[in-house]
Image (cartoon, rainbow over all chains, first blue to last red; front, side, top):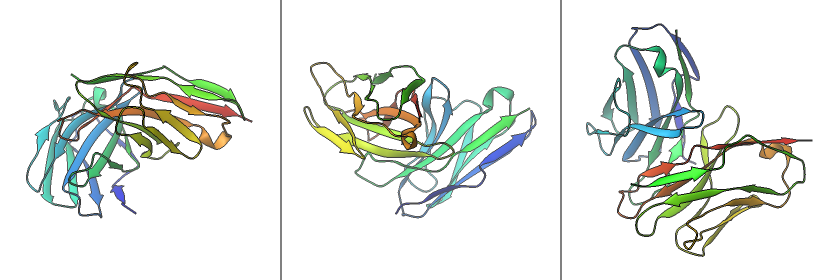
Amino acid sequence: DVKVTQSSRYLVKRTGEKVFLECVQDMDHENMFWYRQDPGLGLRLIYFSYDVKMKEKGDIPEGYSVSREKKERFSLILESASTNQTSMYLCASRGQGTPQQFFGPGTRLTVL
Amino acid sequence: GNSVTQMEGPVTLSEEAFLTINCTYTATGYPSLFWYVQYPGEGLQLLLKATKADDKGSNKGFEATYRKETTSFHLEKGSVQVSDSAVYFCALVGYNAGNMLTFGGGTRLMVKP
């Protein structure tokens, strides 16, 4: 089975802090994704990556950056956290040529 | 662009009741359609899918039929259980969209014993 793991289930940070969310997948997938999930809004794509060191903006990239130095790891970075970034963050991965994405358990981030 | 609209929740049912969660979509061409489920404290899991018109996806007693004429993919189950309590997301991959998923807003289902 594909396994996607995220470094933390819950995080509490202060406004202005730099925040790193880590995601690791074990199926050698080329594509990885970061979403945020908010009530009533579903999942919104922040960034995705289709290869090592490659990244593309999603629908809501403002205030975020990403890093993909190794194929299995995709990091989401909040350079200066703000209260409106309080949310559930979900990482996903996908192999080539298939639309099915595999999701991690999520990180619930609270910014005070 | 592509979009997915789901009925707003929460949907509250008693055990063994019939479930319908409505989903309609807007997309060009022939999208592939999905239902994902998110159990409490977990990530999303693929529940079922359909890739062409009139296909029926099914899994764990859930079913959904791809209706191109009504641009719908409603999720149904004949007899829900408490363990079905979760958030359900309808999603699509548009034709020539590079396999990118577009999600609906999610519908929370609560099943009471």
